Image (cartoon, rainbow, N blue to C red; front, side, top):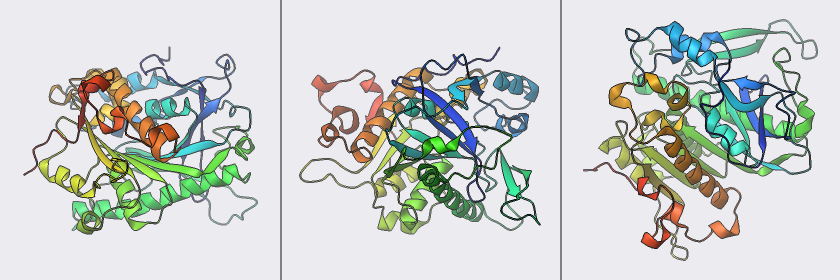
Length: 401
């Protein structure tokens, strides 16, 4: 029987739906959105692992037990039994509300569904979340649907291509590989944003008609074009920072979860970024004095009038790199002993999502009550302690030389 209960129940007031879509420009993308209530009898919960081809690469993550300790079949069976708290193909919630949009860039050896808990939580609070499956060779494996040669626009036929995780080419450095991949990732993020804008304008282009019968015209007039934010995790956070530095993207703000800093050029840290960015780091095993020193260069001094800094670094104590992904829920029993979190996945998820929502309330939704200092985002005295506040480090736990 499929298992949805391993994920935290979304805390927002909306039931969540999801669907897959891609266009000739945009890669295969999972979209999460608010749907109508009481549809669980009509629609099925989406599977976390959308195809058996994903697991052979995904299970070989550095944070999981080695292949000698666990069989691929065991992990695949476990993953195949899991569903997420989102109804596949369910209609967009009725009404005239325009929803803010989050585009999420996943990390290495990931896929479009690895941040389902994060995406379902935000969708339950009235966001549309679009997670493209990067086709740059950094995904565990990526499904790419492409047009066959010799077909015209109206009579298009397509074929599927599976893109495996790629290693360095001969003579290529790790830095060269990752910077090459980041360029393609940024193109895919912009294409995904354009795809969502097209849906909102009533011009959907869906070429996965054998995956879904969803009526994408439902999105017409329902996308808030002035409220797009970018979120990344690990390599996805590096992609976010490079996109903001290049100024090729018009996202209002960004959330960089436990960023992988190696692929970024030094001039990025010299010149800084214009958009507000919230860095949320794990406390254990991943960040080093060198990476933290690079992040600190991107932080801005507080505004003299409000005392608020538009770029902040917050660390969640007791967490590891995968604490901000679904891995910690789906495959928690397979974590390596030296990479297990000290903080429970449920508590770390709650803290992470509270920080993200507060930041988005301030910089994306621009809610008035978030324009002055609040304890959750900005810290506060003992009389302003919130639940699990003792797990939040305002800054870093890493000693920077």
